[in-house]
Image 1 (cartoon, one colour):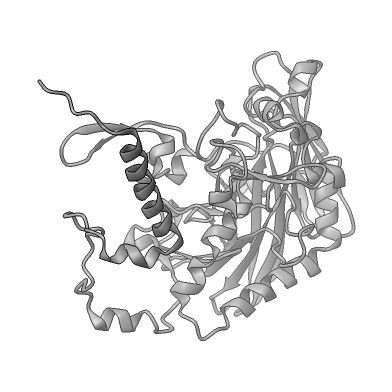
Image 2: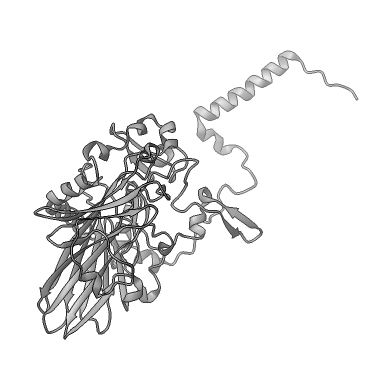
Length: 461
């Protein structure tokens, strides 16, 4: 086969022409319009998408705020963040009970990814594929609130009327209808049943005040109850709230130590402090070592340990005690009660809060980010959960009223409700274990919970 001999000068001349052409296209991109186009389409979505004009027009309607109903089987997958910014994840479920409780610093790369790490099987129409947390397993099989209630927590209402005591717990099984209304940062849950003489409204949130980073980042959840008398006669109404001592929930094994609940009170609050007593120094460095606090922001009566379920009249009829203990891993659940005589058409109000303080960042996170070694910013302001609770009690009126005013002001708009609600999808991420504010004030975030560090610009900018 005869070889073609390329003249060196000819080669250089042709190469220069090609290089000049490429450079010209970069400087003058319009010149490229006349260049040959590829035979395949650049975009396979047609200009005319066949969308119904009536549907487009409906997007501009004010509409109504979203509500989810028990009778429509819509409560199963609801999880709305109701903790402070950068202080872990606590969700309120569709029936008003709290779940997930990712407050124990377990979310760190190589340790815990996503809110529910799992691999699921997905049929893509051609083959069966394994889908992991990073690829969207929780979109295929969303987390169910009932499967992730890490800590025992809840409320019950007792009504004494006509010589009878009627009791209902605030959960999906006890009511004919439950309605969940999300309006971040607030969520409102209402309970009603035919023949039951009261309706209950529960509002759950953490203080959220724009331009006030300090008071929007409290490791706390507020739970405000309103029980209204629907009957034509007065009745005695009692509210019982309970909360499990969640300290060392993950690491408190047999022989490791004991849980302690201690009751105290101030002029404005009734408090149950939850701690863990251990001689194990390694356990004191674990992510779930710290403290919790369950508080009624009023004068009530507290019991550091209450008996097992279901709730009966005996749960409300207790002699207050000051302290209770339980050897790990046994549960220790404390309760606080408030009772009042309520006239027809009137209501009993009870404001509770749950605070936590777990300032030991995950060891993997400390290796990844030096700033994590000193803990979180809330740890520089509060030594324990009780200090968080006392601060909340001292500033309760301002924190709650300002948050509620912000929420009502934001929604008092001519913009469609669907649009207003969706604007908070990104913001509420700040109230999850996906983000951190370290002791030195640095903001830091995963790309996704526990995966892909850190504060990557294509996600966070």
